Image 1: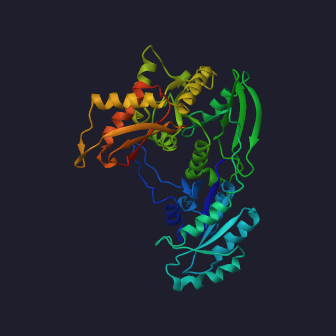
Image 2: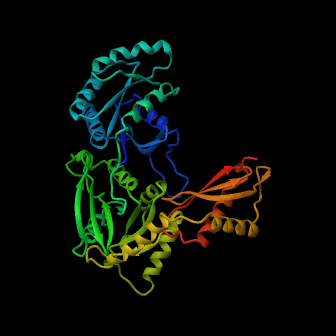
Image 3: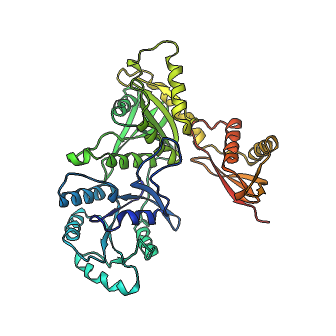
Length: 435
């Protein structure tokens, strides 16, 4: 599982501001993909080459609950999900009963805690941190989310806890998860996938989370299905908090190679389906669209083609995703999922020879020369693959600002036409060629 850091604290101490600072101010309420709009309370962050997941409990609003109950639920959320907790306090208001209440909850968790004191906006306010020693944690770190003060010290402390952390999983196993809005049949589909004709090896329960990874073998290929179904052992407030399940979904996506986006074939596509798919796209994972409940759809010989057309119209941002149709209830067409998982995983991990890449680039530019943009003309000199999962390519150009986004999209399409990248995103990164 990715190393996970949660920010917890009473309301209005600056949790969301700290979240945005650590994430590099890249967190936006809206996304540039059509139909993908959402609040963000979970993201990937990086410091000194180390990457970790970050949760903002300030983004979770539990309404109609007493003040202390709200604090408790937010703190418990962090305790459940996190490997490390940043306990954020307010240096201007000082230690409050709410801070003491949270501290007591954190003591019982046995999770490592970094105490940060926010709103220390200049050196004259440094003495404000001393009273926070009474909370009983290690030396408080003074920060200012408004001015960015103390962020380096805080992040240095965060990654010091990652030194002994490692994700252990079978490198030969294809890891996949099923995501989708409620009641599309994810649990039933998972059960069908793990049917009697699959050899289940083990159920591995996370030590600090309720997520279950199930290893199994099908036709001599190892798989790991990552469970996102249900919230176990939670109170009613948790179960009614959609954003809590979003965190679970995003965590599962992060740990997957392939993501199966499950939609309801009987009800059809709704806006939330595009929202859910957006999380997988943003994480740069291989994707398959699974149309479930196909058994209860009134069909003729054109029904499947009509549904495929509808999906392509609604999911334009993943037009490269294969589509399969299943009935988990009747355990039908489940076997069609596995060839698609194999195919998109192969494409997701694909490595292309430099000579082939450069020939495709040369042909694309010859057929459609680069236009003038930002008062200059882009001249590409070279392309090379620098990563897989997903396939990532470095394009050397005289000036990246001369490349219009539409031309980059054109190149993306040219590579897809020449090479089978079905099911996987591909990334083109521009790099200025040094003279």
